[in-house]
Image: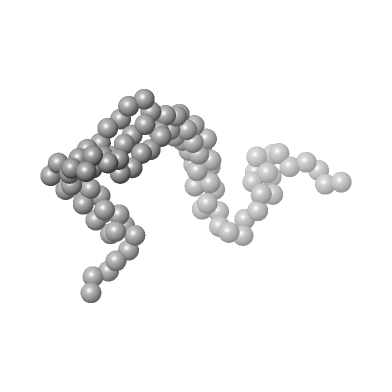
Length: 98
């Protein structure tokens, strides 16, 4: 029995959609910020996605997420037991105890 995981299922769905599009059963259309997937023989809309401001949201998430991810990756090698105090001492940011 072959292994079935979410990636295999997603690949099969994409392959089936591609085969249906190549056979002329599905037609994709984009107009005024709305993407639709239409079944051509029944003339029905299968899926409608509102993607008007999606690119702006993606750009903002990359601008915010990339520096945070890089910072986490940079300090991940220090181990799980490391706390913030050695980092503060290393940078000279730790104040005197009161």
